[in-house]
Image 1 (cartoon, rainbow, N blue to C red):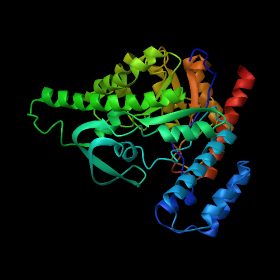
Image 2: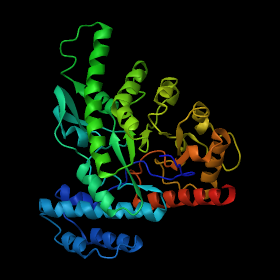
Image 3: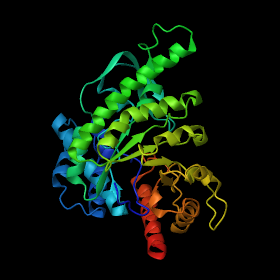
Image 4: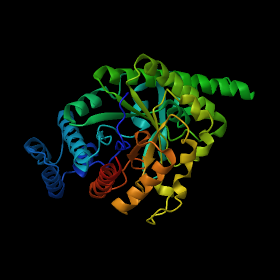
Length: 383
């Protein structure tokens, strides 16, 4: 995309799901409180007609598959309107269509067998799978979701996908390594083969989204720094996923999101992705002081690696692991600190550290609203 927006704002993938979205899929009865929440949020988000949803929820139990799909549609509608009302430039629906960032894609890929539940960082569980055969795509697993979001959204849309390295690293391997000797290079090559196959699958999913007209793609790679001797494998997998698509259409925008890592391990390998990936989004606010003023913000030290690069900095200015509502002043201090280092407002995009799924919608909205207001005030004063 040739014309970059100054201090563009966006979210990082996930929001909590409303209780009335979750309960029908867990065979739990809808309550009057759930229905009242749906009505109250519709009023707050200026959603005019939710009579179909309220009638559906009034059934309370025994929802058909078709009725569940309509509930997902409304959950997506609410989430998108929340982000739009908060003032974001790029929106998504907070994974209202998805189960989980690992389990959801793996269910749609042949060659995997689910084993058991494992706990994630926030004490929620997902099913972990083993690759038992060469992976092949069952279907384009974000296509229907993207169609619904594009139909609903009034703002530009960004669709996130879990990247190849994370899907590989979070899976047991019972196929590529089954005949491996103890030789390190053999194990390394088999790991690379697994990544190549998964990169092809992610690439095909991205192509299906591009055919719909999606221009902004986020690749989530939380596992990127898990094994410091595999950073080059991570970079190669991203190249195989994205580079041809980027070469065919320079107007596409690719972002990579990595959170809660030792980011220094990524360098200098990351510079190989200049011209392939537009934005790297890291978490900063979680490591930062909440003190106001022009202070040394230690949480933002990693910015020094981006100063002389071509990358757009995806700047996390909101801590997603606390209900503390960052003030506009604190957010502005963080942005201005980054601007002093990067020197180019078109090379800084503003967002939370990570997804906000562990926070309530009330808290998420207040955080995001303050974030966009802080950006607007900086643009009015300086640009």
